[in-house]
Length: 299
Image (cartoon, rainbow, N blue to C red; front, side, top):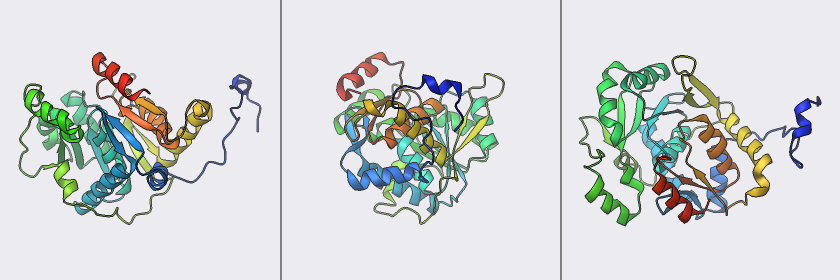
């Protein structure tokens, strides 16, 4: 291997290359974790633990629901939501259905959202209720045919879910009534209760996701990534930080938004490859919630 000048600055113990990389996807890593440690938490959210087995089941059912609704390999499925369990359930479910995940910034303006949906060609969107009305305004000008709505309360702990319904849901704009033809995510998943994932072969070279650039040099552009690129990045992070992370014990706090590449590649891929739980923070600017997450989940 060529002796590049930056290699001398690598930390002790970090190899100059990790090649050959395993021919695996993040789906494979979660399959392994669900088999070896099914009860270990993959996600932590507002004091609720969601195990590998639970995420595996829900994402299998969501994948089956997508295929039943006509989603085919290579189709784009867009998410409009912050960091929450649905962002992971639908991500893995989309991949298991052969789809390409497009996680969009929920704070986009109507014009930015319209551009992104047109650019990626998504016909299916999963949207958090807070952003449902905005999506419906621009839907006629896009290719979106199937709208799946979900509330932030859907995967809260039972007591917190009740409190949220009574105190915050209407006051903070989370409550919506769906228009004809639109469906709730929880209902869609329940319809496929116990369903196995679609019988599809997902290989490392398949396209996995499209993330939009920040628009610093103009209109945001969709950047595509393969399944293998995620595994490669996760393993590279593990090579640097693996000595500080203990498999099936530690927690990585996911406060960077998953619709950004840093969170997807630097945090999520690392957590999955290192088999550690992700503590999801939906709004990193909410300092009280941020501190409460740190105190409870101890990342």
